[in-house]
Amino acid sequence: MSAIIFRYKKKQSICIDYQVLFEELRDLCFPAFKYKQGNCHNIVHYCSMILNQRGIKHKKIWFYAPVRFISGSKECIVRPDPNHLSISGNLKWGYHVALLFEDGRNCQVFDWMIQETQPMNINDWVMCMGLKNYKIDIVASENYLFYENPEKVKNNTIRYFKYEDKCRDHYWIAKGMAINETAYEFYQSEGHLRETHPKDFKLLVGSIINFECIIRDNQSNSRINDSFREKHALIIQKYRNIYFKNLNKWIDKIEIFDI
Image (cartoon, rainbow, N blue to C red; front, side, top):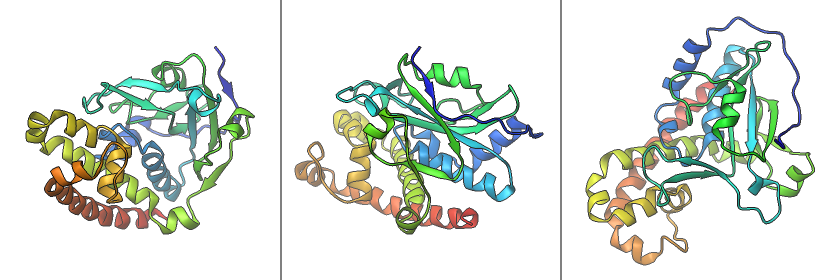
């Protein structure tokens, strides 16, 4: 196994009822994690804000697939899509991140995208990714997201930035939480579109890139073109309205913990 763990430093264990904490955080970030296509970093950082406000020590554990650190590789984390939204039937992630609580040898991973009922240990969490070649980084909780530079990952020098300046001013976390909630509502409510236009349904909501492009940004791309937008103009406008309603809600929620 070619895993590389860059940084890992033990902290003094603290007394936490992990199951209770897991369920509480799960309820606070519901339903964003129910849409599995993306935004794991926003879900995790929102929960991290809550924990930091309470003074609960924790870290983040990042998992990188070869597509992120091997030039030319297309190997991703591939997992079955439980909502059956993606056209291929599988989720494809280049990276993934979860909360990590260090409690001596009994480390706990909180990851509602993968396991909604209880915490996981690190070994089980890593095995869930299904890769033999990967890289793991364990970092401080204030690190929000990594810089997009695969060569840096390749050289074991991943650089992260905090939730401040541009990402904070432009509400990146709220936008991520809102797009996931809106996508999950679309999935639950638009059974008619799934039946009448199954390919269009999956093309729109089965890809977070497409859903963000159309619903959040009101733009087109190579797969969701102007013809598609005209064909589904009413439903697109409906969910753009829902998205902005959800966005305002998440902005208000995040401001409580953004200290």
